[in-house]
Image (cartoon, rainbow over all chains, first blue to last red; front, side):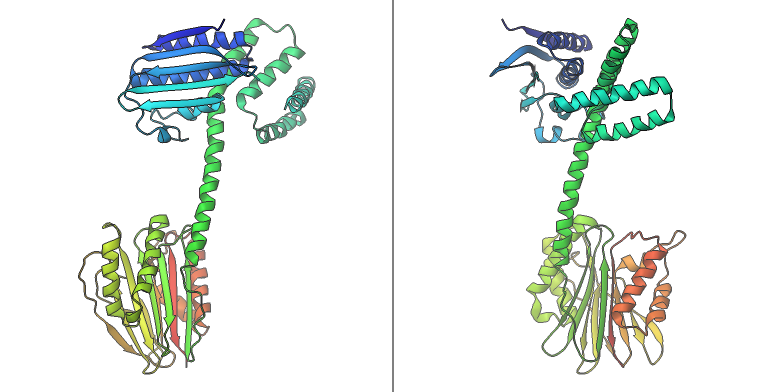
Length: 133
Length: 337
């Protein structure tokens, strides 16, 4: 049976809960401590984006399998304002919060697969997977 | 990968072991060398912390729980540093890519400048043009027609870098599209002004000076569009005279007329055209005076024109510590004795 967790994000508590759930599942799947921390950081960034730009949304965490591989899949959804220029936010060095290295390019780097769907005024869905090596 | 990880593990273990026993500077030096190697292998800071912890735990099996747990916190913090490190790497790659694109563009720009040799009896010609960055907003031009008349021009796009360079290439094509007037300075500037006015952004301007020498009657005709005045050297008087011109910069207004001036040219006389990158050379304390430039030219005036411009450039470059603040173009046309 596949493990699935939903965490509602509407406060910083939600961010912590999503991190916790992600770390727990990553550990159960068998990720080492560095990768656990990477997955958790990715979840953190996604959840913060929801909290900061869409006010509320969801982080969905589940085990992923594909042709014998095991991994962890994180889906972040919100019904916020959407991203007007996706190419721009995926550029390194572009940040609205002034941080170094973080943001969506950081999430992409921490994980193995990364997909983003965003419609202005409808919301954003980001799906990302990290595989166990 | 697994193999290198294993050997790294062993290497780090030996190093740490050595240090804990000797506490020597030598062991620390080895660690510094090791870090370079790790960076070459793209090892991130968080992986380094994790490596340290696993090696340490193996060497000291019964570590207090607090020590082990404290590394979780360090690891978490290092993830952020690792991301910044990776971002830096990718930005550096992108910078290299931009740099090489810019190099190609700069080479293309060089091909826009004339490269044939002026080979006319009794004429000595020299020009040097150096961009402040990779690409130049200065343009120079020279041409010799079937009657032996020689046209020379220096243009300066206000601004520098890529936008100025793109604008400069337009000047080149615009000049080629109006060849029939090329040796009539005022008429040429008028046509060019119309092209520039139609084609460039209203906040870009181009200044230009155009001169044309007719060896049959030894007269030099010239006109300027808001350009830095050049100099006329009279051999008989041994003086430099400013080549002042009246005329609006190119591209400002649709209908502009330019005044044309003429000078009789005696043997040994020469004309100096330049861009404001020459006169706006700055030493640490001060701008360079225009007289200083004529003094420099005077110092080298016994040399061929190309040597004069080269030496003046080298001297000015040295005076401002080899850092050009603006694109630099200097051209000399001389009637030989």
